[in-house]
Length: 170
Length: 153
Image 1 (cartoon, helix red, strand yellow):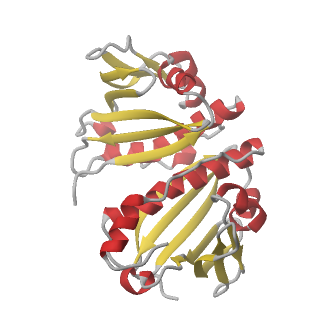
Image 2 (cartoon, chains in turn orange, cyan):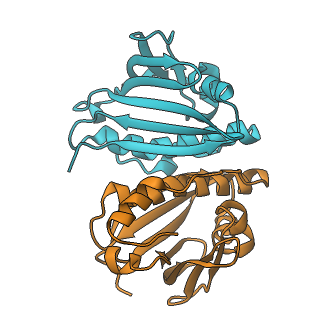
C-alpha cells in the first residue's frame, strides 16, 4: 500500500521508563492491549500486508486494517479503519504509526495518526481524546505494573460530526 | 495555516493537590524538569523564571493565573540568542479530577508565526510531562538526557 499521500494530523509523544522490546510487546499483544485500550484487544499479524484487528470486550470487530511498515522494536504502521458503515468510503483510510526510540534511560514512543485528505477538528477529536488516555495508561502499565482506570464518555463531538455526514455509529 | 498552538493531555494517578505542588514547587521541579527550578512568588503579574542548577536564568515571563489546584498560567520565553525573535507565549495548565486520576491539559499558545521557540517547546513538553507523571506514580523521574530531545542547533 502506498502511503506517500498521507499527512500527519494528530501526533502524540510519550516517554516511558521501559525498553523498546517491552513497549513493542505492549503495543502488539492482545493480553497487554486489553489492559490499557479500554478493554479492547489488538490482534496483529506482524508482517507487511498482515491483518490488524481490534475487538471490543464482547469480541465484536471494532477496527480493521493492514500492516504497512513493520520494523520490530522500531516502527510499526498500519491502517486503522473503524468498522462503521460508510466511514471508510466517506473519510478515507486512517493510518496509525508507532515509532519507538531509545532516549537515555527511557523510550520515546511517538504515535502519528495520518489521513489521505484534510479532515476537520470535529472528526479528529475522537482520536485526540482517545490516544492520550490509551498511551497514558500504557505508560503506567509498563512502569507500575497496573494500568490506569480511565472511564471515558463516548466522543460526542466526533459522533455528532459523523452523523452529519450520514455515517451510522452505534 | 493558523498560528501554532501546542496541546498536551495526560492522565496521572495522583490528586490535584499533589499535582499542583509538583507544578509549582521549585525544589520538586528540579527533579523532573531537566534540573530547572521554577521561581516565582506566584502572584498574578509577578515574574516567573526557570533557573538552571548553576543559578542562571534560562527562561522568563510572568504569572497570569494562579487558582490552586485547578488552573495555572504563565508566559515565558527562552532567553538564549537562538530565540531572540520570539516573545513570551502563554502556557496554561488545567487539572481536572477524573475518577481516581487527574487529567492534566497543557495549552501553549501565542507564538509568533514561524516561531523557533514553538518547535523547541513541542519537543520539551512531552519529556517533562512524562517525567512528571512517572515521579508522581512511581516516585522516580525519567532519565532522559537533554540531547535525546534532538533540539535543532
